[in-house]
Image 1 (cartoon, rainbow, N blue to C red):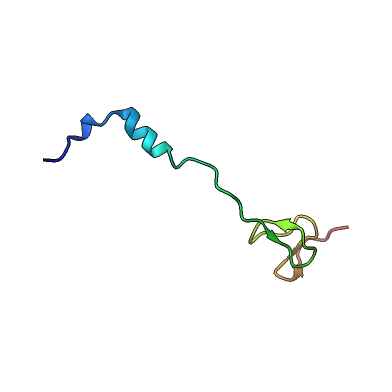
Image 2 (cartoon, rainbow, N blue to C red):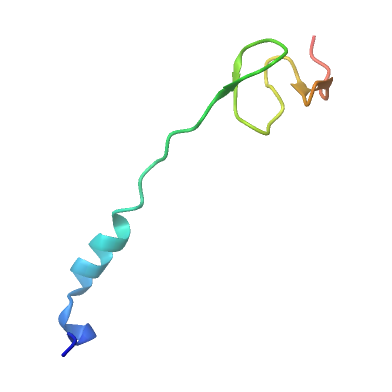
Length: 59
């Protein structure tokens, strides 16, 4: 016979759910234009390029 759900304490349930609440590593990639680290699928904060084109004019 299966265990009754109320026999599992709230602390046990919450600690099991909280086990996955950790920070994940960010995979930073190199910008093909200036070779600085940037987040994937984002405009490069250093040079302003994305997808081979200049999206933001930088000085």
